[in-house]
Amino acid sequence: MHGAGNDYIYVNTLLYSIPDPEKTAIAWSDRHKGIGSDGLVLIGKSPVPEADFSMRIFNADGSEAMMCGNASRCIGKYLYERALTTQTHIRLLTLSGVKKLELHVKDNKVDSVTVDMGEPIFEDERQFNPDLGKGQKPREGSLFVSMGNPHYVIFTDDIDQVGETGPVLEHHPAFPQRCNIEFARIEPDGNIRTRVWERGSGITMACGTGACATAVAACATGRAGRKSSIIMDGGTLDIEWRESDNHVYMTGPAAFVFDGEAEL
Image (tube, rainbow, N blue to C red; front, side, top):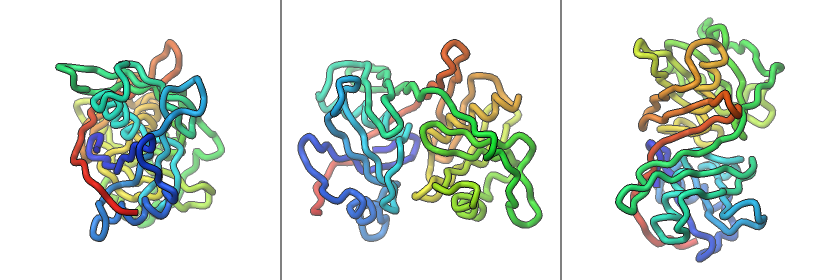
């Protein structure tokens, strides 16, 4: 499945067990020798009553992520359209807490999903001005924002430096647990064009938490209001940072690509 081009392999662990998800994620995510994906997502039963289902996500390099906005939307679509639930409001347990999904259903199909991503977290000590190489510096107001996983949002006209600068900053000493890096440009129409380097996966077509972090950073630095359309390589995500509860809400598509069988 994919959400705005951010593609993962999904396994329903209520039916199939994956004993070594780290190793499996590496093997299956290989786009030349495996199935090909940004990582592996395991859908499971929630061990706590506060959630309906659980999600574990492993990046293409086998590292486990805290959560993924695009993957959570895909899980909502999977659960509803595969008749694992009839509810259009789903509580999904992730390593960064319980996320609430609102499914927008049309003709018995999930057209889009809104995810309550919770409150953003700012860490002042990580708002630094790293060397981007070639004498470049981020524009004033670049921010570190946690959306359950770490993001450093850089406002720059040169968003295509993602492949060169992204891996350097992912492993920058300021981020001992590594970091997702967003390169964002405010467009004349007010939309925000963003490219992302995801921790453990590299350049991806979209990143849900990255889109949220970008929108929050743009609002916090006076570049945008509380509602933004984040245009990523694989599509557009609509983000609202609500003043009423300080939560960030992400709305976007989810799509099936294919089903298949694979041997461990």
